[in-house]
Structures are given as structure tokens and as C-alpha cells.
Image (cartoon, rainbow, N blue to C red):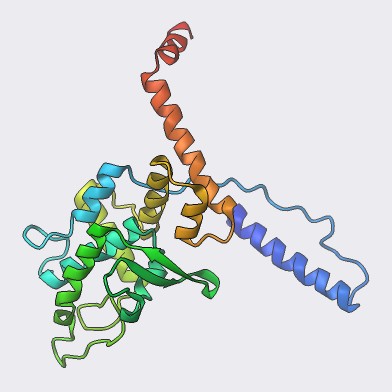
Length: 252
């Protein structure tokens, strides 16, 4: 009773697959899951930011102003800015972001090679602003070497303050902190920037197939959920601005 519908559906699917396997092997004669139902799933809309607050969040790691962590170094701020640019500008998953190696970056920093789900490799474009932010960070990356022994991960793009590869958990913490600091959204997570990227591309007229390729979605149906987000926002704008909507409300 304390499990979500998604969790229950996943467990039911696993048991059903196992029982079908046993039937094929002849271990059992009847499939006890044949009449087992699947919980109804209610797909939640992904969390995303409007264009203006998304820009504020991405630009919030500043080297000449207050930081979200006392004593944050200039190199760490430039790192955070470059990470946010890739999460929002290129729509990377947080796991893809922290797994980036220096060898995955093109010479001119206009593309990155990403290893996505299912170990599928794809090339992702990097916008001009993101490329500048990435170049600024790479120039000071060595400053993140371990202050005690000078140890630094020779391959990882994004480093912790001890020179090791930055982890997913740390990026999640940083997004929450900057979210609260810049746009009063402490509930944000890295995937919200990826969702924002897809939503804003769709609103700007990008083709669904192009967005699917950029994000590395295996199925187009996964990408299509962003059309529902755009439709919801369109209906909200219609209700707020169109005179027929005002007339209907007055009549009601």
C-alpha cells in the first residue's frame, strides 16, 4: 500500500516475465499472472523552468559576487557555470555530464561525445555561450587539484575541490542550492534543466525528431510528452489573454 503505481507496475512486469519464462521452459503448466492486472499509471509532467528563470539559474555562478557556498573558489564557480550551460543548453543527463572525459570534447568545444542509456553514444552540439563557459572553466580546471597533494583526475572534465571526478550527488546539491539562491526554487534537480531545454526547443519550433536525437531518447513517445507541456502553457496563455476566454468566464 505504501508503493507508488509505477513501482507496482514494474514489479508486476518482472513477475509476469518470470512466469512466462517458466512456462516456456516447461517448469510450470499455467501462468499464474495471466489474469493479473497492471496499476493505472498517471504520468506526471516533468518539472521545468520558464526561459527567464532558467537563464538566471545558469548565469548565477558568478566569480565577482556572492556564492552559494562560503569560500567557493573562482574555479569552482566557473565549473558550475559550465555544468549548468551543458545541462540546460545541451540537455545532458546528470550522469552523462559527470561521466564526460576531456577526450569527449571536440577541439573547438562545439560538440561533446556522450555515452547515454544503454551505452548508446551520441554527439551533442554545444552552443556558443556554453562553449565559452566551458573554455573559461578548462583554463582554470587545474586549480581544482587536491590542495594537499596536488592530485587531479587526468581524464574527468568536471572535478571536485579535491581533484576527483565530480559525482552525481554533488551536482544535485549544487542545482538545489543555486535554484534557491537564484530563482527561489530549492526543489530543482538537474533533470529540470534538461526538461527546460527540451520544452524551450519545442516552443521555439524545433522538430520532435531533432529533440529526440539531442536528448538521446530511444522512443519518440518519451519526447512527445513535451508537446503536452507546450499545449498546457498555450492554453494558459489563451485563457489569460484571448477575449473569447474572458467572455466565457463572464458568462459562467
